[in-house]
Image (cartoon, rainbow, N blue to C red; front, side, top):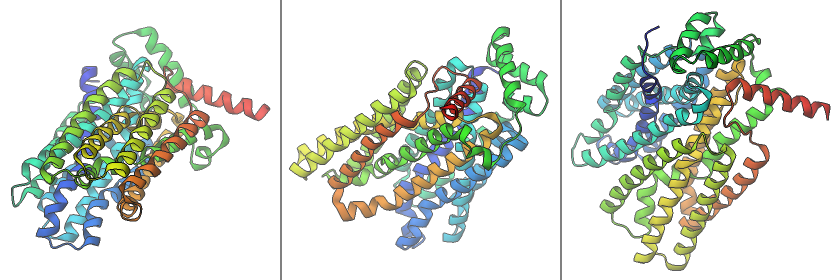
Length: 452
């Protein structure tokens, strides 16, 4: 095995997150120009925007089969190739149908990375660093979103600007491809296919030569790997139910608290409360910068504060921000004071989201499932997350039209309150535990419930 630094492993392992973030955000600016040049009607515009989500659902669902058969590293290389094809195809698309198909291909790459990378990073990182390393994926997502906002603003004056916006994703995809060639395979997968010596070498590298930590980790992995490969029956069985509730619950709530709609429709929201278009686009970039900064804060906190506490504080902060925005809009809509207070509350909302629900959802999805069904579990949760994203994205404009912006925020605020109750009652606490310890404690929990 080639020896590469841990920083290289975690950075390139998480680089798919940058592509993930860039590809889902770049279309928000590009669609303004695409619909004019390709003469798209409203339905076709919606399909171009949501086609990545369709591909993401397909990619996430298909990942489980290939993840457990071919390994994590190989799948990451395939994802980089898919990203490159999708990005270049979108950038050069001559008409609507080609653009639609290549956007679906791009979405497949997004779905693969969302299901693959959280689990891959967890399996490589020492348990003391699980949260921080897994959060690097979300940090890359936020950097990708910020990069998309900046390039959207930069290319807006060019006639072919939308082609540059969409095609630029090929550059980081090619970098990911060459970086992935040097990455190690997951030690869990290596043990599973009988390559224990290679697994030890990877663990020695990521644990910086700590033989005791490596021996302990290897023993735990071997016990877990000896279990029979599970399927859908095992995934929905009583033993794994706490993990399934936690993974699916996090995946769904991360979307239905309104996060992505608020982030991607931020320019629309800013213009509705009285900002000009240019100011709204610049404010969008400001939000992207806040996202990146608070995600770094989340990385620093992740292995020192319980997951459930962070989610509770995050949902409380988001809910309060939404209620403040709704109140100011109802009392003083259209004034300069309302515009500024709304902008501050919106930024606070996004900061709480980016520091808690955004990263912790992917941390949970990557760590709660037992090894014998990890591929299946992460695929299902990722696909569910993308499906929930699609539902929220499609219903948000309708909610704005039916209820107005203030009442829409109240609805999302109420969901934040429900979210706090559900999290504290049903989610597992996983901070400071190895993947194998999480699995063992979950099985003890379900055994105790059966006896009771």
